[in-house]
Length: 604
Image 1 (tube, one colour):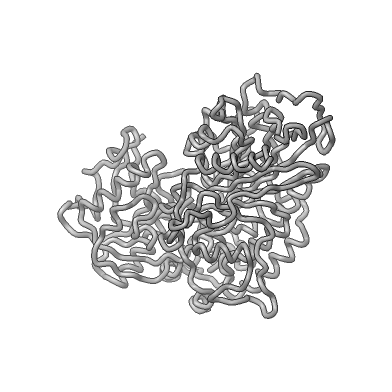
Image 2: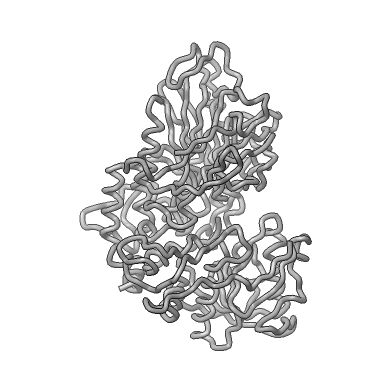
């Protein structure tokens, strides 16, 4: 998921603030009938945690895209879709690090050879409880739940390479210092891998490219890569001086290096993903992953056949699919949605003679992190500690709403997207009354605004913490002047160029309307003659004053035309703009209704 940048120092923030289970992949639900019962190695038997002659059992547990969600996420961000055998679906509340820790600890029982991993975006775009403290709370939580290996994602670069290294090594924040007297942040107990992120001058990896986990006579190599397109979806400052290499080629390089060192069992942690045909966490991916789309399919097909499984992320989707490797052999590719709502369990056999994983033994399962299990007391203590530090900022009311205002990521336009665009337009008009419109990238909206109280503030009250969770990046609201032709180009870039395969639909402020024709392809999906501003057609030769966050204004998310604008002007951060708008347009007696989300007409 996209959208970045550097968060202002905590002092400036403070001042401004005053388990349903399904077996998929190698199991019958998600593979061809011929693969339903995995072929065992010679002499192998069932039963986890036991020897089978020359093979022993190995368990790998995985989460992805946690994004600092220590507390149970709210709204749609805190639910997963379960599909029943009769085709009906059910929404299940899930997530919260206290429940996740318990779930992982329960899953490890009876598995003496178990390793817990994550393919990126463990931090970044985090709710206030973690984000306010530069994600130190999340690193401490990962240490507590015994995380073993993490690969980088794009959001690990939100605050730059130096900050990423601090999260690994520890030490107080260079601007904010330590948050409690006498308590120094110790860093991650686990390696953070970045095989395909190299210094553009030296070519050397920024972080360790791989690690080898040794477990009672078993050696498994883990290689961590992030998507090659990371520079397109984070701030330029966050990746300054770095080069991002092809994922499959990098994995191939280090798979060969591991084999030269006698490590034949290899698992790749890949921060790139796909989208299954169904939103259900237990959906069928079809034969050879035919019902999975997205960049991970090509990456998986090209990745060295010596890799035994790909644990992936980035798209926040749940899947455990079988995709053929370059030799045509089935290989599991998994993802556990996001925010700690699911975890993936992979079980497999390790052959001592070949020093490799028996590929046909690999099974995958996505488990729900139900909230009806016991909380892990040590994680409760950790959350409570950081909540006490954040409380003076977190609980301050900034607005009132009469109903949920969702950020529906499956829709072209969402009520919350409209609200945020309107808030940025209102803020921009205080800087330049001639501002015409505002556009908001969907990846910058991280959660719903939920009517039900998240704490003791009461239903309908929007707290600063809730606003922070929606917009955690501290982008500024920037103004730029575009010609009408450039404005039309920006709209076309939603569905063409870098965004043609996976469109990114900008959220639009009140007054801008147009028709999106999904029966067409590429840029033609934007019906040019339909684009109107306050009822008037866009004049290609006229100038328009446009507001957008600094990430989008800099050409992020594939909107390169934005960077060609003129007469730039920088305003306050986007959360301040949202806060101003909510406070000015709502009260306890007159709460704000959800916008209708009717500015973009969609033809299907």
